[in-house]
Length: 219
Image (cartoon, rainbow, N blue to C red; front, side):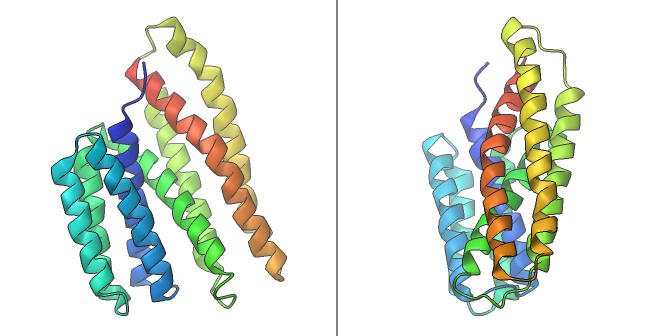
């Protein structure tokens, strides 16, 4: 069965907005980084609207409007990020365990990529948040794997055939993400470049894992 595109878009929006809220609360990065993240979440909201989540996309957009209005006050802006997260959660419409896994995994990787690129603008950013995002992505991957493994056994031949694909994609994703903190241990900027590259690699395997896992859960 083809995965629900609305669920995937909404999970991505919820996770990215949630991770952005954490960065805003910790005052990581400049207003430019928050504007970049708002644009990314806004693109997700547009995708939600195209797939039929008009009301929820409006909630996300309202939250982003507050974020933009408070660009120089990151802790106040975290309220807007949480509103955007709520819009994504409302639109996702799947069991909570899978939603938490999808949102945490997709959001952590997206924000990790944005943060890694922002080092080009501000090379003095702390590396700790990138490490946390890598570990939270791993946690989301584990939660999603449990949600998929405990779902109903796939009834179709296609669903059963997708299980090995999910296993391979999950292992590759786990290895890529686990290597991010090791790369960040390198004191030069090469460490940040390598970590960002590993986030890139993980987007391919994670994308495959999320889509295939969703198809398996759908049976």
